[in-house]
Image 1 (cartoon, rainbow, N blue to C red):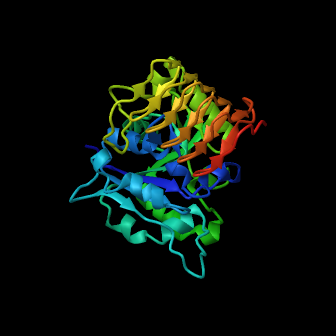
Image 2: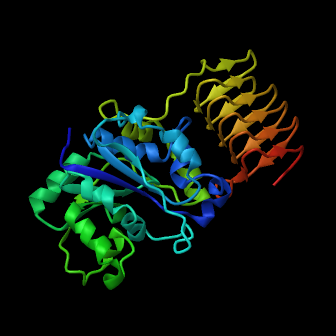
Image 3: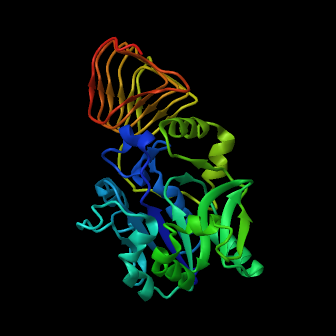
Length: 342
C-alpha cells in the first residue's frame, strides 16, 4: 500500500465536441471498450499503484458517474479509513456550477487538510492509459523537483506528482498567480518551479471529441493495443454487473469485435464494439460501429461507421452510413426510423 500518495481525479472538463454523448453524463462516465467507463483507467491505475485515498472532483452531469462509482467497492476503495471521496462543485450564486480546477479544489480544502499523505497525484479523467504512479513518485523523489509531469514523447498526459503542501499553496495563491490548474503552473516558464518529466511508454489516448472517441475505440480492437492497456499484472476494474453470456443465433457471424455480456446477436457484426444487453436482429449488418448498452437493432438494417448511445431503438430496414472521419451519432433513447441515409 502506498501511504505517501493521495489521488485526485479532476473531472471538471467538458468538451463541446463531445456534447451529443455528454449532454446527460460526465465525460468521466462515457462508456468505452464494451463494459468500461473512461474514469476506470485512471482510477484503476491509482488503485494498482497502492493509492487508497482518492477524490473525484466532477462538475457536470455527475449522476451516472455517482451510480458507476458507488461506494468504490469495485476498486477496493470502500474503506473505514481513506477510500473514495466524491467532491462535486457547489452550486452557489457565485459559481453557478462553472468554475476552474483550482477553484473547485478550494471548496474542499478540508479534504486535503485531513489527508495524511505527503504527495499527491493530480490527473484528469479522460485519458486512456495504464500507468504505475509508484514509478512516477520514485522519479519525482530521485530528481528532487517541485512537480513531475507525465509525458509520452512531447505529449503531456496532464498528470502531475507534487507535494500536497505545494498543491495547497497553488490553490490558496490562485488569485495572485492567475493559475486555474496545475497544468498552467507547469506551462508557465516564469513560475519558478522546477518541473521534471516522467516518460510513459504504454498505450495512450485522449478522448476529447467524437473523432478521438471513435478512433480510440477502434484502436482498442487491435490486439497489441488491448494487451498494452489490459494487463494481467495491472488490471482495469469497473462496476460489476451480473448478466448472462451473450447468445448467438444460427445465422450470426461475428468477426474482430468486442461483445459484452447479455447480448443477443442474430445478424453480422464486424470490427465493432457491442456493449451489454444489445439486441441485433436477423439480416442486420454492423461494421466499424460502437453500440452502447440496451440498444435494439431491428431486422435487415445496415450500419457502418455509427455510434449508438444507450437505449436506442433502430427500426427494421434502417440504413445508417457514416465515415471514419464523421461517424453518425444517435443520442440516448432515440428511436431511429427507416432509410436514414447520411
